[in-house]
Length: 325
Image 1 (spheres, one colour):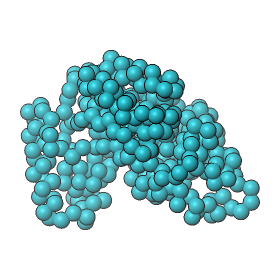
Image 2 (image 1 turned 180 degrees about the horizontal axis):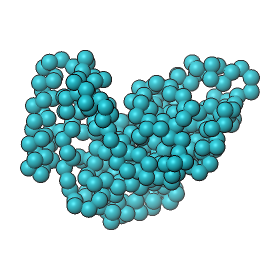
Image 3 (image 1 turned 180 degrees about the vertical axis):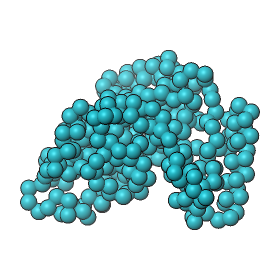
């Protein structure tokens, strides 16, 4: 994978943020927010919808502070949920501020996490909850995220998209919960936003005792020491860092620019891995013509990186609209 273009010699701040609220005029909010981000050299993705705001942005610390102050001044956003980390290089190629139907797409009408989400559990209390054999632990993230790392005892729904979660739960409900009184259910995701919706969904489905990790995996990895952790592996993030570990340190995975799946250090040693072209998971999914095209693109990216400039044709790591958090 080519090295990301270096924008600053110092570390950059990365802010993963969301807030469920009510916006009457997303179009009126979008332009000032985008202009402020561009003014301060901020890149990443911000999604606006009637139900609130969601996204991850990166840039100089002072610029991030200005943008966060602006967002906190929006209606009912004073308590904006933000997870901060750092990156040695700019993890995004460009800025996108988009208006969507949902800030995290589940496709369930009349679901309002502001009033019906589950019970928050602080990171320092999470281990006791999920270690209890009476607790059902569910990872609400996509399959390729779970493959990189998850909590002990967590159930992997093997969903390709967050919008698949309701159908999965309804089909597996009896097997998971039985037919008597439902047990406790604890759910988690990267930053917390998918759990806001998934716990609200379970409560709408009649499950009363539903819990979710406050601040998500990111807050857990930031605050719980590695020696006490029940997390195994690394955590996938939707930017050029690919994965992070305890203390929010940058992880060991690369990104396959053909399929956008994370690639472990072991898989990078596979004869089926070719940087910028294919990985063991997708080598059979591409034609020779596609591989030739990827190979040429990779050559151009490497040349641009050697010259210290960004390659405008690079395939970017983007936050998918269905569930980045």
